[in-house]
Image 1 (tube, rainbow, N blue to C red):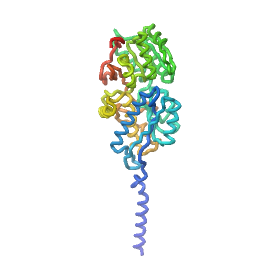
Image 2 (image 1 turned 180 degrees about the vertical axis):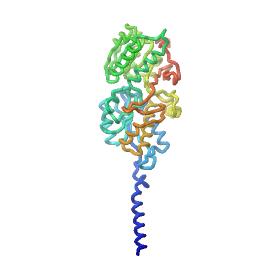
Image 3 (image 1 turned 135 degrees about the horizontal axis):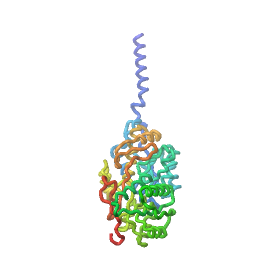
Image 4 (image 1 turned 120 degrees about the horizontal axis):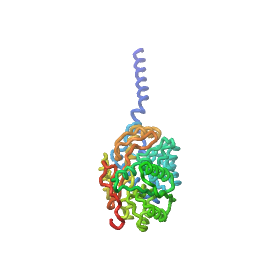
Length: 407
């Protein structure tokens, strides 16, 4: 009788033990079919050219990750493919907020991928914070978004202070005998325009340059002639600006018409899309931009990215494709390290990121700003080439800009 009792106790113990470990040995049955991630990005409207580049980067990265089975999630002990949901925000600030909410409420995304341009991200950042869902932002110089105490916003992309400093580093690298001194700033009166203008002005004063013209313009401006004529009259050798792509094209055409030729021309945002070169041809050459990346960068995975982009689009990866691709790399890595699809756990993992992406070494500061290099790109002969920093450059900076009719 004692022997039977002992065997019964042992059997019961085995059953209880198996029950206790059952969720750990067969969780795959409850695993989701895919991991939903989403982006409210401009596919139409004034930011459409840049937004489509971001979409391409996201799609290529997702395809590469899914080709390997997806992302390993420890909670389910298996690889799960990513599912990218992209909604067009039509380059509208109100619409992008609505799209962000839809991505969360309808599609249950575990993370957001950013749109294109600083104003769009200014609208998106509070929504990500409210929904406690991480947002990886590209194509945004907006420094202010990282000064508001947000915990769910991350950006492996340069910000206004990086741009302000580096533009004047480039100018300082020009031999003294031919270095320009007079600067014109023509800027959209918007959050990033205001913070960058202030920083550019401070850098100019600190380094011995003179800001001879400072003009604001509103979104949608079509006639830049008063500002251009002011810069021409003041003898401004440097033009610093940041219009939307359509405005930047109009500004450049009017500069040609009015005979204003700065020696150095830097514009953020406007020259990023390939549409710039197609629309302006030779007069679009020699403008500099700071898009955060270039296909000539020697970083792990860039050659592969160029190859797959070339196959799909007929050219090496566009400037916004790299940062967008990197955001998906970062997110996939964070999900794997988190071992969970809980957005809060994913956020914590993103904050601890330390990895190589197509941007190079990638990590974040406590405020969500990426530790990044500011790359300066210049349009030369219809192509975007990397000119700064010199150790990474694939071409030399062309300075001064050639005359409009001698290109």
